[in-house]
Image (cartoon, rainbow, N blue to C red; front, side, top):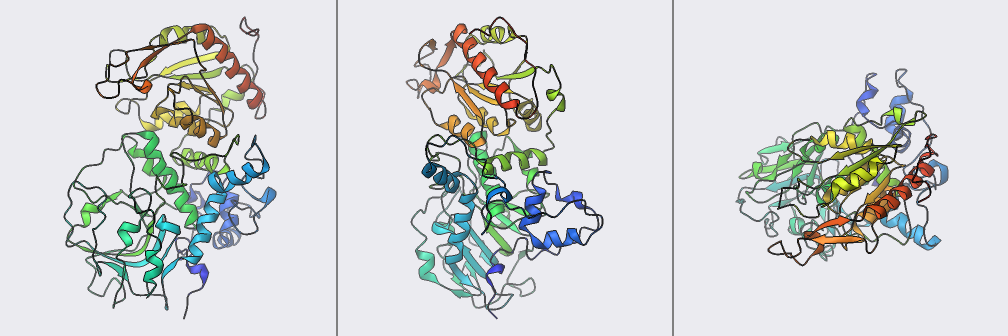
Length: 520
């Protein structure tokens, strides 16, 4: 029997759904439930037949499904805005919104490298250039692997050490080797995939370890840089979409790291949004033959044409429904909620200034030399509630950081990884990159993707300090410290306030009193 196309994605389909009235276990943002149920008919049917299911079944879809259009889609055609042309808007949809998912899923329909004849056979399908792959009944032999200092060893497997029992198209696999770089493709790991002469099962004596949970294999970017690390988490979320997931957390995440080195993770709690189980490291399989019932080779953080590091974002466009969905999903899973008192009449505008290090720390650059002066300017505005924070992972938990960020209306900080928090601002917020240090696109694009108003310092009215102080990068403005003219900062605050009020009014009326700066 040849398996139908619907069996390509097994993550949801192979799960027997029995909620026994405990629908809260979905742990989904309330805005997302109609789309998850609309996308997954098995889940919707289970809900419809359960009197205790509190959700109404409606015909909604994320946007990448065939026939998903208009008001039925998550974006409802309201995103993006401000595109330079209809061409740019369409380009944005496929590069930076749910059309990106649709393209990958279509690629996988054609790249079936290993196909099953019967249900217990193996399979391997991939997106172009092996940027994502899905395997069933996968065999990997780690007995000859010795971890060293190479995190992504490219010649790890010989023929017969990785593979499955299936109809194998070796030439199709070889065609996927155009981008054999560690954080762009899985080709190096899969290039010696072999047709084996035995089926993969838990009782065949060939597997020292058999993992029957869906397993997501990930090659991670830097765990000490929150911006780069969240390229991992964002692509994990996209991986779940590509793989037809309903975002259940009974999955095993495995860090694909072929080295003996440690991996320092400053936002380790973030994994709780995706799995109920500890993240495993590949070195734990050394010396063993490991079999996977289902293995997902996740989308990678630095793919060509991927998201969101160094991504091309079409001209003018603001607001990706996919980035908004990620933000809502992640914050919900982390237990972060909006303080509803912000919508009460007379509520203050919550202005947060992110401080880079302490003034006496000579190893931290891009510090604001006259920060106290700028804080005093902000406090002149009666409608502002000003908070200065330092997101030090040693003293402020990541969840606490998220709560502060998500309950900020204007978020101000110097160029740096901490501005990753733009992703978790509320929809109406203003992202204020005080100075971009010549890197004009990075956080401007991130704010655009998130659908935020963005402000930054222009030319002039700024003074550089400590040029040449850094022993290696002393000529780079990112390794200087800066002072800012208070009057120009005041003008930009008025601009930020006005942009905030105009947008937040769409959510609830925010009362702003007149003050002496209105004329600026």
